[in-house]
Length: 94
Image: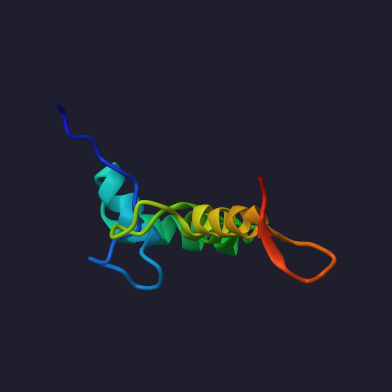
């Protein structure tokens, strides 16, 4: 079985959330180049902050299998699995 790279937020080289270091490791370039590219895109239109935020939400941490968004969706689905009837009791859905 061949091993493949996974896009993850890393702890090694992390400054804020590990997005740039994770992208740099995945692509095989220095994380500082990714940081510079995001800084330039932030200065010219503000897009860099949005890209970083999206990466932070969608990229899982290297210690986890799911991202922040996936965890939030799972919690939402879990809370829908139990509903409250008119008596105020929580009952599982059939």
